[in-house]
Figure 1 (cartoon, one colour):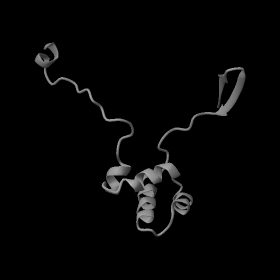
Figure 2 (tube, helix red, strand yellow):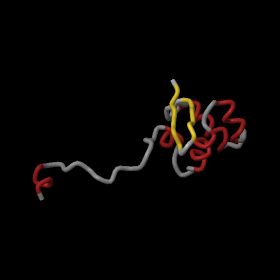
Figure 3 (spheres, helix red, strand yellow):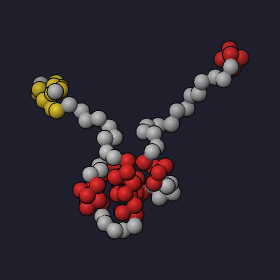
Length: 92
């Protein structure tokens, strides 16, 4: 499947957008542990464990959190609006 985008006067043809988070969480945990323990660098860990380089760098930098919390975390921003617990809160 191929997606075609028109930008200005140029017609750009590119492969479909890849889906997010296709890497294996266990492989990411092992890669983060290996880089944090200085057993290998980013480049070698990315090739060996087949994980995204930028994501690995982000996860290694989050030293204050455990690896399980980082890898299993939700993507995106935290929600600010919560659903009201009862009807009275909804009406004012």
